[in-house]
Length: 231
Image (cartoon, rainbow, N blue to C red; front, side):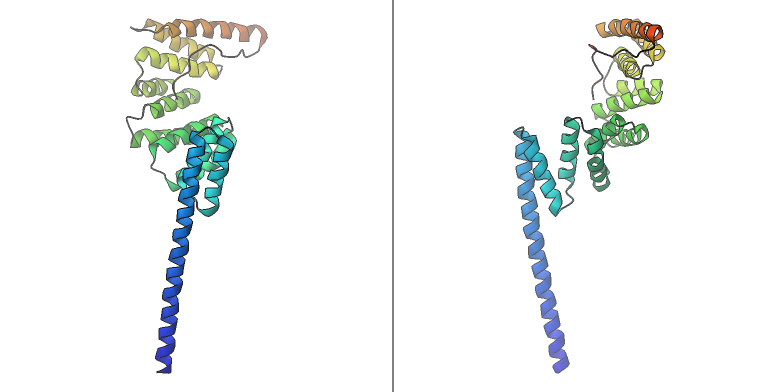
């Protein structure tokens, strides 16, 4: 009898502890949801500093994928791509099949020079969401930077660009990499295609002038007053 009583007591205590743990977990979850809602409202109101502080507070309680994603994006909005990487990496690890997240995380990786990771994430994004135009366009930028110009044009086309616009976009990406000959070639292709936009001829003139300027004094002139590919 004594042994049975001891077992029953232990079992009762175990149930009580389990119930207490569930109550604590529910309270924490409620707190996380409240802080997260506050952070989203602050971001929508343009109070970025407070929003970031609130998102970080969420992470104090839970490795929340929304908070991770938003912190990454807010760092990007501030031009802090290096700071964004850790949050993007954690967000992707928690949610590896979210195409919008992969698209943003991929382009962010490109901005810090990690083009292999950028391509990997962007290819996964278009695989998961073939209609996500900006993922195709971002992939087009990355492929151009990596030297896969045909792949770049194809990706821009899948993102909704006409063949002429796709060549303009690839040409622009080449300009940013100081690849004057490649840029000139794609702008010439764009000019020769039906429905070529005015920026095709504009880009061609820019590529030629920038190439001449770089050969003359060895400097890389800035790219300005030109429409960038959609991100």
